[in-house]
Image (tube, rainbow over all chains, first blue to last red):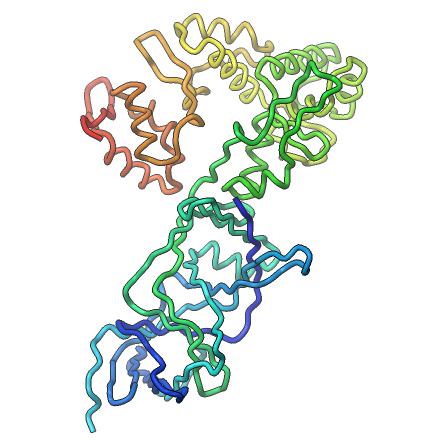
Amino acid sequence: MSMVQITRKFGDQIYLVELQATVEKMSETLDIGTLEIVKENNKKKAAIYVGNQCMEGVVETLQKPLAVLQKSRVGDDESPAHGLNIVSIIKERIRFSSRPLPVKL
Amino acid sequence: MEEDPASQRIPLKFSEYEEEPEFLLLELDKELQNIIEQNPDEQVVLKAGSDSKSSVLCTSNSTYSVRQLIQSNSLLLFQSSHPSEWTLQDSKHSYLELEQIYGSIIIEDKISYWDEDAFEKIPSSISFQEFICQVPASENEIKSFLGSNFIMKKDNTLYRMSPSYIMTLMDWIFAVIHQLRADFSTINVEKFKELARADEIDTDAIISVLWSISRTPFLSPVDTVVINKSLVCFWIGRFLLEDVITIEISRFLLKWREKLPENCKDLVSLDILKGFYFYTGADMIQYFSSSQLPRDPTRCFQVLFQAKSKWLYDEIWPFVETLAVDKSKVEALLLKYGRKQVTKNGVYINSRSTW
């Protein structure tokens, strides 16, 4: 059994978007699309626009938060080892459960 | 997300770096979240077993089993490098789920016996730190186990002691208490070490016995200990039963009472040894330790029902109660692997016919 220390090294907040699709880079451009979040009656609705497609979703609080861990290198060159850093804690997710629809022009 | 205006439009971008950081997602319960956010000094470690199923995450007091849950949905992780722009850092299809469990501490393959008769040759064994690294349990669960199971620490190395050696040392301790006209509540550790040296008895061994019969935390440097009569009664009863394996109840209780110091005799009761025996007949018991049972519920119940096919509910409970931290889950396991039968003589858990 090997033991790895988990240390806290919080950086920029990380956001979680969950969708029933994969996102692939098809061209040189770095643009993916646009995320829109609208507050309505104490709820937050979300929409994601990618190309000429749109998906609707919600922002919801996670029942159990997710810690985001990243591998780190510890020790020196003579005896290198690996550690894990907790870089962020995610308490909400933006969930898209519907299929993409064409954007109405 | 931070307090935000009524609506936000956030451009989403791929990262311009070829090599993206690889993240792991770990689900947190309330206790763990609190430790990570509020207690920066508390150690959290991941102990990875040789197979992916045996990894555990440990805080100082708790142990969690780690399981990877794969899902078909994409979990996209964005980072806000610019105030109004999110950059995709990683895309996951799984996360690690945690379930709190009791740490599994098995010493047989790790800690060697101390040979009390071999004065020159010191047996090799495992160091305390190595043991902490190798055992899938939290540090405090490990210390509690070591401190209450007669594990001796000699020059940072851990050793087990044989039941006969432990009984010899306990007899010596009670003889000294009697000689000094002391009582169990004020045992001066230095005095006992001094007397042990004079009688050429290993002081580390004496310390180990005193710690195990007094609820003193492992490795704590205390000046006095309070010997716990229930623990004395328990250990002597357990060692006696372990030695005979099967015995008639009335004979065992007599033997047990004879072996105890005077102030512990009233505590003799089979209730103290629950989880270390089962009834083989109306008047007979057989030694059977819960520590011998597999941790996997299926195999655990298989072994129990091979020992006997019909158990009283109160009798089987001590053998299965550590299968889950949540008692309702233990109940569910009893009903999954056994068949509950309510009779005028009590509640029984019977073996199901097929496995």
